[in-house]
Length: 306
Image (tube, rainbow, N blue to C red; front, side, top):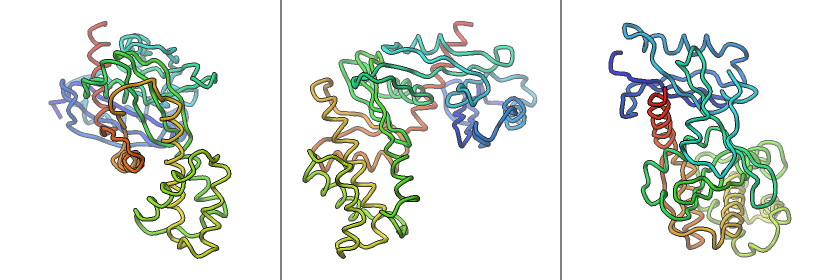
């Protein structure tokens, strides 16, 4: 394949996604592989085998990778850049592999507004991509939400990443859904009505601790108010409502404009739905698009620096 200019990759804990991109960052081809937890010491061989057909006939292609590939589980340990951080600082802190042909993007760290250490790795490229895709994000104090296993709420000021904090919303949902008595039967497909009820029930008493509300997922089933197959959707609504309410309260008065949610369409739709039910509009950006845009920017910056 001769129209590729560089390789972009998100090498997470469970999954690897590699993309052959043209000079503008548009995807020409893609391939998947094992995550960092399964790769062991085989990072170089896995990368070489998955990208061999892209490199045939055109020599080595430069690559830029983000995610857990740069962690203690990964190919090489990339540093955390301390916030506040400018985009250029992130690009400058990339770590080189394979004679400089592969660059690994660093993560970010901060002391969050709850006076606790906080970290992210992988999401920094989505933040960089969002800054490139959304002009308003580069001006003033803006709020960015990256929902996922560990949702990140990020404060950006004039394009500088000031601070962030994490909420293990997705992880808590998975643990309670699969390993607790709260959900005994998984529904088939999405249940918007049950999700909205979970949101509405939380929003009715937002001042009450989530810990004192979670058993309702079980008790409402026992009382006949909630069908068992709808329990997981109800739980999801309650957890995301708590996440959104807590984050917007913590960030109240710290940002202007519309919050931007970056991620998979499924998750951004759920967070947007919760925000809308609470009277707050948001802008949605596709997480893969943002990640690729950010990786392409890092590639241009590091290639220029080299």
